[in-house]
Amino acid sequence: MNKRNNHWLAIAGAWVSLLLMPTAAFAQSAGVQPPNIVLVLADDLGFADLGSYGSEIQTPNIDQLAASGLRFSNFHVAASCAPTRAMLMTGLDSHSVGVANIPEAIPEDQAHAPAYQGVLDTDVPTVAEMLRQAGYRTLMSGKWHLGMADAERPSQRGFDRTFMLADTGADNWRQRSYLPIYAEANWFEDGEPTSLPEDFYSSKHLVDKAIEQIGSESEQPFFTYLAFQAVHIPVQAPAEFRDKYLQTYVDGWHALRSARSQGLANTGILPAVLKGLPMPTTPDWQSLTPQQQAFEARGMAVYAGMVDAMDYNIGRLVKHIETMGALDNTVFIFLSDNGAEGSLATRTLGNNTAPLSAPFRAWMRWVGYNTDSATLGERDSYHDIGPGWASAAVGPLAWYKFFSGEGGLRVPLVISGAHNGRPIVAGAGGVSHTLGWATDVMPTILGLAGVASPTQLHGKTLVPVLADNQAQIRSADEGIGYELGGNKAWLQGDYKLVLNRYGDEAQWQLFNLKADPAETKDLSQVQPERAAAMQVAFAQWADDRGVLPVPADYDQRLIVFRKGLMNRPGLLLAVALMLLAPVALLVLLLVWLRRRRRVS
Image (cartoon, rainbow, N blue to C red; front, side):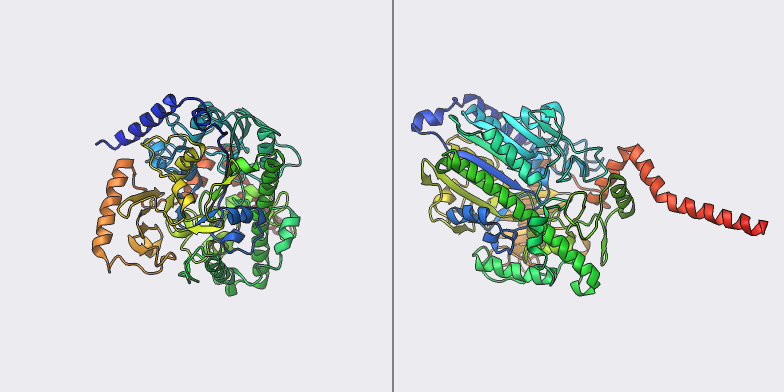
């Protein structure tokens, strides 16, 4: 079968199901209103960043949802934001819907291919379109990053009300870009460009908009998609949240990684206290100067404060739903779009240097950002936590965002709530070790709403797991394929075949995730038949999905910066002038001194 046939069959089947779905059929047949559904998506949140997953960060509101619901220990997504978001919205693999990578990072020799358009295929129905057809009000507040053209905005993809950021990220305090690739932060309300208020802080304002969209009462069930900027770069948080953690991280990232590993075991998320392999990108904490250590510890306090602030505002949303009398008929789904972000943008740590660091710092000065320690995280501040803290944020798991290690793909997932006054989870506070994938969220939402899922979806509903946390939704021979930026994986049963494009690891490795979730023991030489069979399965999947190889020198971060700067020649010239200004002044000084000596 042609590799595009599966794509069109999935689209056709989904649209047939949508067109045949009678409006509010579930309500009429059941005689009760279906549950409201709130999908909450964090950005770049690490696997161990929640209190209910063993973290020291205060997340009481999410933890309360976990205590009355179900936590997932083995749920996976793409290691970058847009591909995950595409799968959440469609239930289909990201390659099948045109979002194999974020548009900013797609190299020119892939951009012609259907899988690599970087925007969500407008021929594919979204979960919002299916729920709206079934009688739901559909609402969206937060980061979209699946297209900015008129037909690509969420206001044209099934959402009745929208307040959305089109870009990969933005400043959390102002309407300002966080990368020089954008002239400004592109915010839209109900499909039209909009401006942010002076008192804007992202986590607060996004929840304000979600509450406004929901209103004080609702005759229809509502679906709210709340997509936070927290904790994406730039890491920023109000001082009152940051200051709780100023003494928390002074022992460094190695100590935190050990503590998180202990916490994951204590909360039942992982089977034991695991010791992960040291990551080659993580500098030795003791190699830093005392001044560097103090700065890094303060930066992680900002990160913790940003998570804390997100949780506080989630609590405001839950309280609003309770006040309107709808809490006993509302389901909450919380997860992250990928693992913690380990890239450096503003400084050098050990052997790790930010790509294009000099022009980036020049751009930061140009637009008014600073890295002052005293106000780190506050308005006009710019910070990223870097690879050391990112490795700690995922506990003992390997790697982080962009990589195919478990630290990039495995994320927290909490499902909680009630329908018609009855809890949707049997055995509150439990943990499911069921293998799950990003495409499972859409059929789960449809199942909770009483809406039939198209049979062509790639995902599996998690609804059976809510009734029995030991239930499995995939057989041992069903596999899940993954590729992003040349990093690859094939998950099947307890095993994972993985390839990360980094130094000596740029080759296939095999791990038993049930016995070794930290990916410390490569079994590819011990079980060569299994490794070979899984490689064959991956190759077939990749051919079906239209996966293309990346250039040998591909670096996602460099592609983002290069494409962005080339698209903004005026900015490129300005940055060049800023960089050359000291050299020009030095030349002028030398000329002046030489002339002065001649005169004297």
